[in-house]
Amino acid sequence: MQDFLRGNYTFLTEFILLGFSSNTQINVILFSIFLFLYLITLLGNGLIITLIRIDSRLHTPMYFFLSVLSIMDMGYVTTTVPQMLVHMICQKKTISYIGCVTQMYIFLMLGITESWLFAIMAYDRYVAICYPLRYKVIMSPLLCGLMVAFCGFWGISCALIYTVSAMILPYCGPNEINHFFCEVPAVLKLACADTSLNDRVDFILGFILLLVPLSLIIIVYINIFAAILRIRSAQGRLKAFSTCASHITVVTMFSIPCMVMYMRPGSEASPEEDKKLALFYNVISAFLNPIIYSLRNKDVKRAFLKVTGWGKVPE
Image (cartoon, one colour):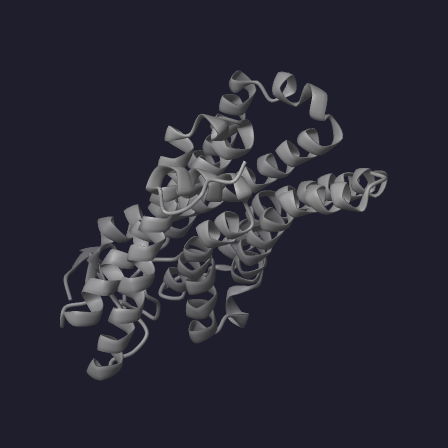
């Protein structure tokens, strides 16, 4: 363990990520599973981005936001999974202090941006269902670009606050993080200082970055469902609802585990539960997103069949 002295503290220059297990055989099995999930995640999200890019029918605001979500998911898993895979098959499981800070910041930036992106996607569905004739006018390319930039601004700025508030604390040993990557709650447990202020900062930021967009999504969907109920034909109601079902599923999978992780006091956190929660909203959610969106989406299926030529393209 490398460290250096400053005042009365010995400060760490690297951490050890304990991961899921110290058993070699279990790690080999986990390596195979997570490698499969990672590659399929990259393939699925990359395929969605490609289809949206080359099929002119998918050049709409909804698919623009979906392509941004796919890019975010690819970055999200790439921030954590490759290193986790390396640590599963190597004896050395260390990460430098700078590497830990960088991983923490990028992970938070992408996660916060994605949480606000879900709210933007809900508003897009609201305009499409409630104002179909004005949809393309309201959701102009300029507005869509500004919305994504707004999400990115929140991600960049708030991730910086999260990361700085965590890493200005003294870390003087032990240097073992009981997690598979440098996530704020796991790293804070190693701080040799009072972290109650950090708990309050995490709760306040969690409220702003998770509950506020989630509340906006709920309000939007209340209005959407009210509009759907006013549609006279059963087929029309079903079609309108099906366009929202995928988004609701994805938001639920991402938001609930994140709220549990970041809005509870650090003293109540269990390392094993934290790893499962992080695995769900980091790896499993990104893996399932392209499957959920493509299986329930006729436009994506049509574009896939058109590109591959594997079947008759439905009109």
